[in-house]
Image 1: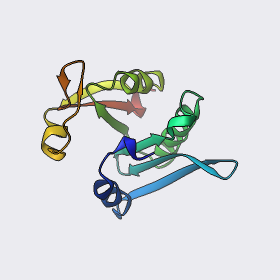
Image 2: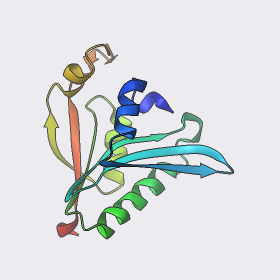
Image 3: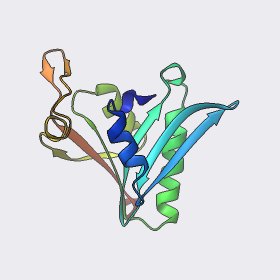
Image 4: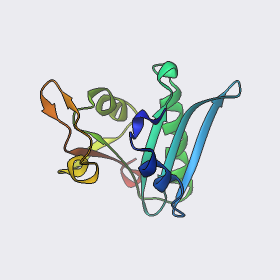
Amino acid sequence: MLDALSIPEQLWGIINDPHCTTYAAYRAEELVAGAVVRWGDESEIEVLAVAREQRRQGIGQIVVARLIEEARTRGASTLLVGTSSIALDNILFYQKCGFRMSHVRKNYFSETYPELKIEWRGIKLRDMIVFDYVFSER
């Protein structure tokens, strides 16, 4: 499940951040998904991961729907989430969940995780695409 964030030290730093809340989803006592959210007026899903063997079963959509409802309950104006500019499945997934493209964090991955040398079809992992779910527009 750690493939959502390949560096365990970075993941533990986010999980242990006192400004974040960690969520876990279980099916028959098996951990199937997890999320970490930084709450505020502009909240952000910092981590979202679904166990590889559990993907494409709607679990991620259920988790995101619950996080959207939690953000609404907490009075957030916006819920953000970012993903790699080369993660096409993630880009489509967030749009399917109701998020809209907001902006690009240029060089996010190349500066934050310089040790990651990931390419997809000749494109280097560098930028993060940020999506938003704006509650005032709903």
